[in-house]
Length: 279
Image (tube, rainbow, N blue to C red):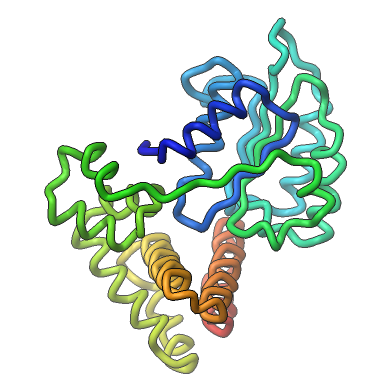
C-alpha cells in the first residue's frame, strides 16, 4: 500500500529501535491497521502474519473487554525461538474500549513479556487514557499527495483516481476502499448513506426496517455510512470547523460500536435504531 515518505521514515526509525508498545494515531481511513500489521511482520521477519504462531490480531469490530482478556491469556503463553522479538499483539482502534477496558489493558501494555511488542491504533488519542499514552511510542499516518497517488496507481484511470483522491483527502485506507469497490455498489451505498446523514432522526428510524431486509449487503451500507462520515470529518478539519469535526468523530465512534454489536450477532434492528438515534 502507498505510504507517505515521512510516515515511512517514522516506520523505519521505529523498526531500528522498537519499544514494547507502539500507538499509531490518525483519522479513520488513514490505513493505520495496514501499517500496524506491516510493522508487526517486519519485526518478526516474516512476509505475512497469517501463519505465524505467536501473533494475535484483534480487529476493531472485536475490540471489547473480552478481547482484553484474550490478550492476557495470549501473553501468558510460552514462545520458542532465538529472536529478541517473537510475539506481536495488534489491536485496532483501542479508543473504542471504555475507560475500564483500557484500565484492564494497561497492565499488558505496561509490562508485556520481554519477547513481545504490542501495536495499537486509534482514531483520536484524546480517547486514550494518559496512563496508556505515557507507556507508548507514538506514530501518525500522513495523507499522501496527488502526485504520489498518481505514481503509485499508474494503472488507474485519471478520472477514477481524481475522484478517489478528492473523496479520501489523500488518506490511503479510504482511497483503497473507494478504488477497489465496484462503482455501482459504492455509488448505491453512498446514496443511501447521504440520505441517512442528511435526513431527520425520524426518517432514519423509519428506514431501519427496510435496511435490515435490504438486498444490498448491510455491511456495504454501513461501510458507506462510515466513508460518508469520514468525508464530512475531513472537510470539517480542512475548514477548521472543530465543532463539526468533533460531532462527526463522535458519530464514527458510535458507528464503530454498532459494527461490534453487529459482529456479535446483536439484533440488527435494535443496533440500527440505537445508531440512528445518535447520528
